[in-house]
Amino acid sequence: MKRWLIWTTVFVGSLLVLAFVGLSFMAGSPKDALAMVRFALPHMHVGNLKPGDSAPDVQLVALDGKNRFHLRERIKERPLVLIFGSFT
Amino acid sequence: MGDITQIYKDYGDRADFLTIYIREAHPLDEWQMKSNDKDKDNVCYVQPKTLEQRINIANDFTQRFKFPLPFGVDEMNNAANNAYAAWPERLYIIDESGHISYKGGNGPFKYDPKEVRAWLAQRYGDVKHAGS
Figure 1 (spheres, rainbow over the protein chains, first blue to last red):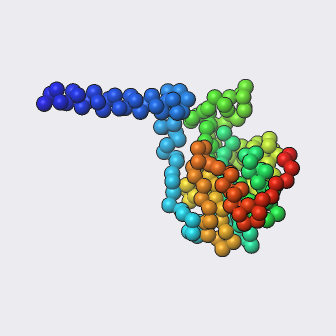
Figure 2 (figure 1 turned 90 degrees about the horizontal axis):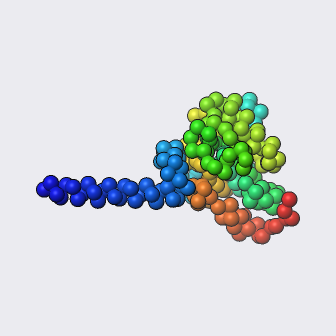
Figure 3 (figure 1 turned 30 degrees about the vertical axis):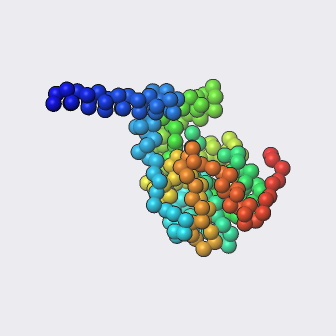
């Protein structure tokens, strides 16, 4: 029983180490892998929206920092391309 | 963003565009990337804590790249980001009736302006103006 437990622990541990090495390789370095798990994965979502769904309306702020407008105000007689992103 | 700017130049007279600035992907205090360092791209910001900080970064961005697309900034409650599962970057096309016609994948790996160009080309034909 004890031997079984040791082998399971070794197996799971090896898997974790392998996963971390793989992630480090993918992200660039072990530091990047940790940052990815801590800061990126919690914010990345597939979301429930799918083609055919009504586009949700949200309020946005203009670049002057004062005026606000609604996303759906921008839907007119033409398709609307939305580009979400940030600077960094 | 260069691809998107070119698509805007090619199809801006046929479709509307809106860029939405959301929470930063690689700020100094989270997952800073080497490519963002001062000696490279020089985009070093901490994650904005106030709307004013967020607006300032958005303005730095549009001014640095002379970014021509219409622009909106997500509120600090991240309502737009949450509604569209947008972070770190994502593309959508909404049709005239207000329904989602195209939903792109999460950036950076599944963010693909070519798919937006293909959608527009299918509808309006291939348009390619001279690059800037």
